[in-house]
Image (cartoon, rainbow, N blue to C red; front, top):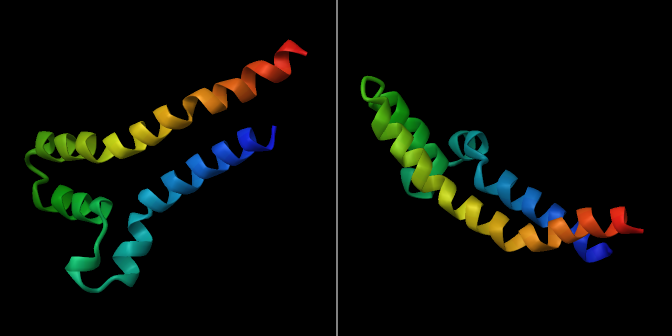
Length: 86
């Protein structure tokens, strides 16, 4: 049962760390240290007239989060289904 809770916590920690663009924008002064989310934010400011370019970038950046969720999905669903079967 603890592995189920740890899987949810790991997923939440990954998503929070992966999408922390505000912290990376404030702390990292060099562009070489920016995360993908910061680059997308800067790209959305630059290409404001062409939102489809920014949306395509957001789709590409969301792929790692989707992969981590798919890897944790079985454990999370087991945590939802098992307690309801008792």
